[in-house]
Amino acid sequence: MISKLDYGWLGLGLLLLVVGHGWGLFIAPPEREMGEVYRIIYTHVPSAWMALLAFTTTLFASLTYLFRGSFKADALAEASAEVGVFFNVFCLILFDFVCFLFVFVVFDFCVCFVLFSFSFCFFCCLFLFLFLLFLFLFCLTLSFCLFVV
Image (cartoon, rainbow, N blue to C red; front, side):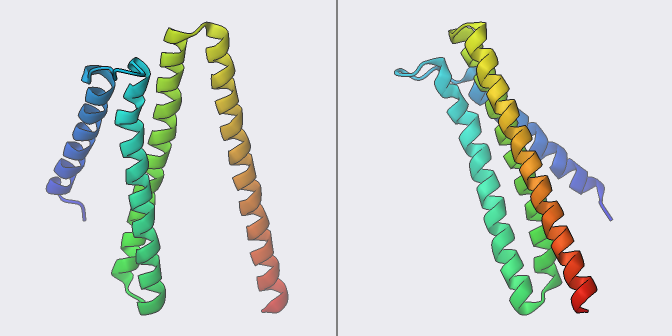
C-alpha cells in the first residue's frame, strides 16, 4: 500500500531532478574552453552515473537472491532495475535533445538534421536488435520446455 508520504518523496525527487537539470542546463556558467556545449556534462553524466549505480544495485541484489533466496533482495533488484532504465532513457533522450539544440545553434540545419537522423536510426536499429534477441531467447526457451520436459 502506497502512503501519502511515499507520493511526497516521489514528488520531491522529481522536483529536485527537474530543478537540478534545469540549473545545469540554463543557469550554470559556460565553460572557459568549450563554451555552451559543455553544459551537457552537468546533466548527462549524473544521469549516466545514476543508471550505472542502479544497475550495479540490481546485480548485487540479484546475486543475493540467487544465493540466499531473500525476497527482499528480489524486490530491491526489480525496483533498482526500473530506476536504472528510467535514468538510462532519460540520459539518452536528454543527450540527444540538448545536442540537437546546441548543434543547431552552433552549426547549420543540415549538420543538425544529419546528427539527429543518425541518432534516431541508431536507436531504432538497437530496439530491433534487442527485440529479435528477445524473440530468439523466447523461442529457445519454449523449445527447451517443450522438447526436454
